Image (cartoon, rainbow, N blue to C red; front, side, top):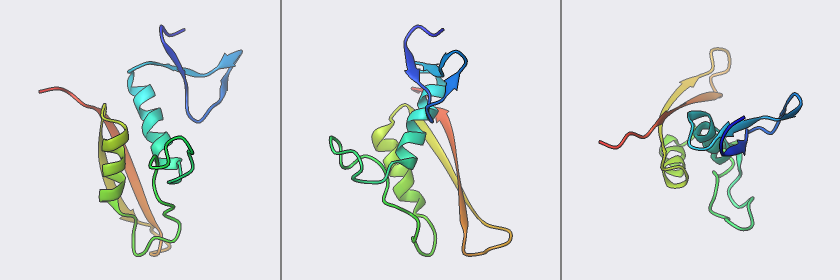
Length: 106
């Protein structure tokens, strides 16, 4: 059990209790970035600027700068490395990979 537990995202059970991550651990920071990426802009009434615009019909590709800015604004503990690549079968589909690293103070 962790000292300061936070529910893991997505919420799930790790028998017999809910899965948790320790506060300020890499797992907890990744969970926070995940929440930013999957939350549609305006979904949270108490914080309508949280999240990203729905990228479903974004043309031609997702805006990596917009994604990076959202992560930097809402999760200052993380450094996000983004990479975009086309789908091997369907060129209209773009895959975005997000790698999260801990921000180190220099």
